[in-house]
Image (tube, rainbow, N blue to C red; front, side):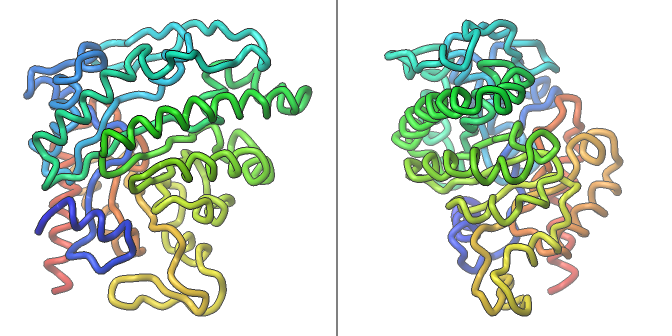
Length: 355
């Protein structure tokens, strides 16, 4: 089986050999750093190290992808924010922003040459040299709504959505310009998948109607400039916005463990009886508009659970019809490699049992 082709088949709605098991979110863990002798924070700013760490769980645990970078601060830093790169078990964090108000936000003319953007683009090239024919290369970027929250502070942005909605929408549009420029540059480097992370759009933070009217149109614009397969990840209890997420134009949506996969599959149908035909979920309204990626708990099962806990949750997700098996969100740095291996083993055991 060609791992890359298998993943791309699923995202294209074609028959696949087996459900892929990968991660569209943060992939680096401390145990892998120790085995590869490549560590944070150096791997955030060195293309060779980023590529090695981004492919480490494929080499060490059989995960079916390489995925870079390891945080959601790359764009904010290039926009002018000060970033603390963290340490071996803490991802980079924004410590200072130059933007005092929404109207201050603008994209620097040399945005694509600033901060770590050139490092990410170079790391894609290194990964393509090593794995281009065999392994899907996934690159994560920040969605425009979340980026705006990084630039202004999430609390400030949410407050101004009520007090100064016009200013905030203009700010989101300016953030969208940056996201589109970055996505186009990444597309030109030709990874296989771009994953847009929009965690600030979770229903716990904004109303589903706000997602539909404010966030969704900008994510549609962003989808239109991406020339690779594309996945949308939103954290939290995203069940109320599942249908909107799936109708934006992404090949798949990534969800957390508090989303019921079977119910989500039904929610994606345009009506009528749900059928499983040749491994695909169908309805009278046709095939689902997006595949579902997820949703093995990152914070509980993969981080704190036993390998048996992992296998039990994997088999539950596969039985519910998940299209691509993956952690529900970014891996905690202290997650054990044994639990990542258990994801792959459980997927294999599931298919051995039904054959």
